[in-house]
Image (cartoon, rainbow, N blue to C red; front, side, top):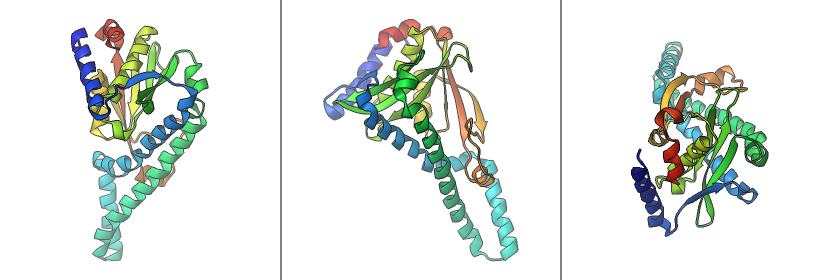
Length: 261
């Protein structure tokens, strides 16, 4: 993307926000007073993963569909009741929702006990890390974090905790937040930015691709580090983890990013 094209896109993004509120969104570093709004947006974003995983994600897992079909056939053979064929799919969906909620809530508790419970210590006072908020009319409408990864990937920074208030989506807020992470990575000498997502919503993947990320791998049946799942959770909660990366050196983005803001 050239400098002129980037400036034009920025103007278009800001115009989209002005059309709704008469104000322009801007991105700044997190402040302690932002904590309640940041926590609310983060909580709502995480909770959206429950129906996304339980229902939308089902069609992405043919192995799960095959298993549920086999369960239905076995139950029919055992009971010889036709109503089982109609009832079991509803039971399966309920179980997928129950276990998706259980796992996601566990992930939320884990996040709150670590970085999202101590934003100042984990992001603002740590070298190679930061958390930003998008502000519109004095209100926080989105957040994103960058976390240096000196052990996992030399010279890489990880984009984390991207979340936008659903009332302000499709206005370019996510793009502005993502660009802030890319700018941070470039100015701090990181060679690449990585991220991982289990989202099934196409809009999330379009956002990362628009920012210039490319998918370098997909882990089917992903389980987060440090998380132990029961047998039932593994049956009724399955996600695909997409790994994205953007190489700042290969794309020669450093000069562009410094002029995009």
